[in-house]
Length: 230
Image 1 (cartoon, rainbow, N blue to C red):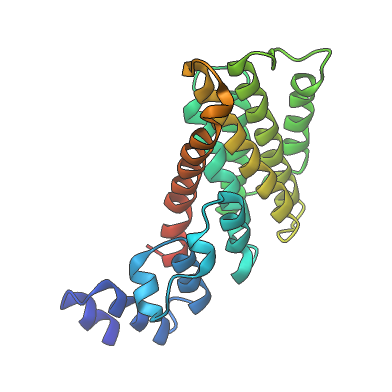
Image 2: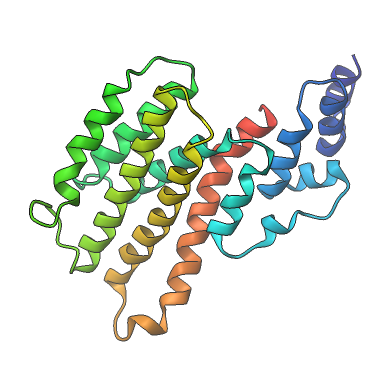
């Protein structure tokens, strides 16, 4: 009743979030995760300074902190980076089809759908030639080729997440999801180098900051609605 009245009265979001925790609609762990993701209302609702992890510049350290309240974020992180890379490399095969299928498998499993473990294993087998120096279709000595190669490795990590979920295991997805994140950052960095003239070392840090910002935003867009149940 309290929650309904607050929502009807247009109460501040932080007050509504506190009420949702009080009545058991929103687990406090999810609220804390939302704060770690950088949601201002969640941080206000907790009445605490933003967690240190939310202020770290390195996205891999920030992502690592997302597991502080349970393993549920990891498959969703994998989906977030796969969909981000799918948009970046749209129409390029590989990696786009691999990214699309891997993300789709994880999403199906997260919705409670059934995916035989043979499906992600088949996808992993399909990627293998493009990760082999003798048979790969992209040239990693070129900037765009290096970007696409990193994206294929990210897709493999996402497919590994799908395989683990299909086997009924969640906690072990942590490692694969973090690999997918790191590879996504690398892919986005190299994707930007195509337009760079001169010494790449002079702008490398700027490229990394921009790539990490895109990954962070993608993870926030994917996880915040789930964390807050909206």
